Image (cartoon, rainbow, N blue to C red):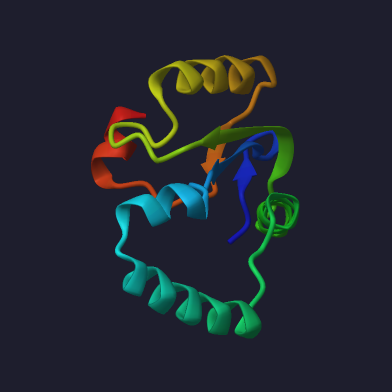
Length: 124
């Protein structure tokens, strides 16, 4: 799919969201010891099969996907959160910051690197 605009390529503003993981120490307080052992055994096997992708690698891939689709990158925003906001994914305040930044960069569209629920799409 090529993103075109009557004046050329669509200008895209990219939004990447990174959800922080709680420390294993915090998790272990809520989980019985036998479950911690089982979880650690399972995740050790998963780690060997595929290494997690870091934020920079994920953002680079996101940029590449957008430019491959024909977008011109107008700007980027990275949001770090403990957990997704059910209403907007990123929080109302950050959403306003992103809207202002996208408008000032004359972006035609905003691309988010996470799947949005129908209610989040509507709220955004």
